[in-house]
Image (cartoon, rainbow, N blue to C red):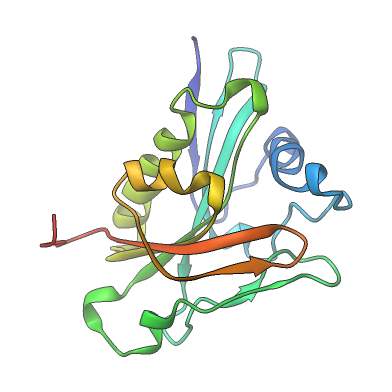
Length: 184
């Protein structure tokens, strides 16, 4: 296949190819304007992507640390009229076993490269980088329904009720203990 997995730590500059893939996979199909693929905290996140030998980015994802006093609720994107993604209710409890907590967002794979393990590779890389960078103990995400099987194959569990992210579609929240999970 000749693909390379790249990881970018907080503070690194991301390429336009990275953002182009993110837009093409996640925002353009929903009719969002160019720019909706960028998040205000991208500079604080860890990013991972697969690229081919010509430098075309084929799949992207990011993970960020959830602030210690945050429940994880936030706007879906930095553009106007962004939908609010709901809180991860377990993070409202003061539990040391869940912090530092991280969230995976903006996972997308180009249509012609789906179902080839690229997304699973990104999830594994993002988890490992978050543990190494921040000592992450728990991971959280809001999954489109079609992505749940991939996340579940990597040990993520759904919780709560299905909800609608306006302009995006139905989602379920998922979580995973990243360190010290005795439930496995």
